[in-house]
Image 1: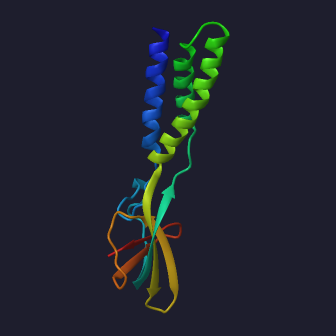
Image 2: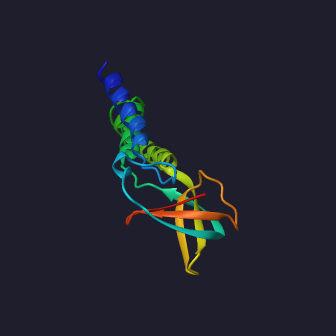
Image 3: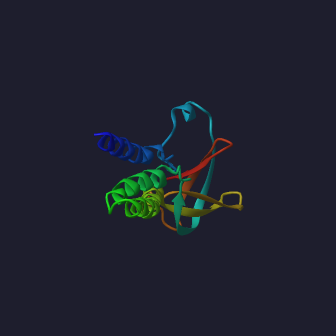
Length: 151
């Protein structure tokens, strides 16, 4: 019974770890970012490059995977075999959990290079959730910390 509860808690923690990913989209604003003035610059998309955006890993995937792997490995053999199985299971489970968390925290992105109306070049990287083409006229919205590219 205790093992089932532990497994349920670990699975819940791993599932919730996906909820902490911060958006890097030009279309998503945090509540604290609303009603603030932003400067607007205009320009033309000069080039696009596909990139991956990775969030920092929390370690929940590694810990959860290690715990589950350790529990599963503990059921193998008796005595020292059980201990070895638990250690091996924890290592393999930790590696799998780490990869699962990494996959959940990686998103497709675009590096957008823009020639501003004043002639300067600038580049902004954001999630690839809005289509852009070379030659598109775009707006850059800046608040001092972040810059977003929109149509």
